[in-house]
Length: 135
Image 1 (spheres, helix red, strand yellow):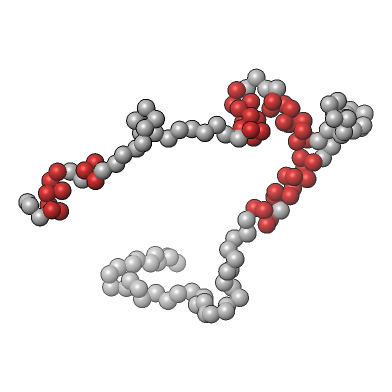
Image 2 (tube, helix red, strand yellow; image 1 turned 180 degrees about the vertical axis):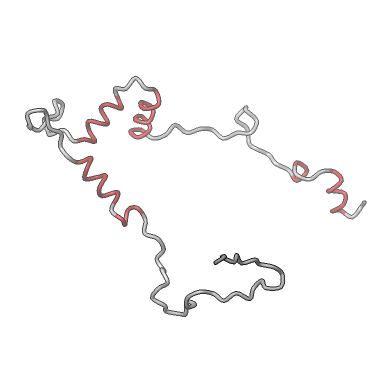
């Protein structure tokens, strides 16, 4: 038995029937709210719960933060690692999280001036002459 492959040509294009039933107004199959976000799925809550867990030492005792006197969480330990890191990228990320990103000036001239664009920058002289009607 040989399997025939469908060939779409100009003669049979558009003549195929759609499979299934078409949607009608109020159909329960229509997903009006769209795909759930990661937060709706519960991933954010899982991350927060994991970071809020206390750390334990080898003997099973909760590790107490020497600075605050409170139990040390995973998030606090990770922040301490990032702030004392010799890795420049990790340390910069920690600074940006704590104090915000440093504003980067957006300039086009390198001198800090305003970016000035004119229509002439985008249209060649021949195109400009054609649009004005003086070919």
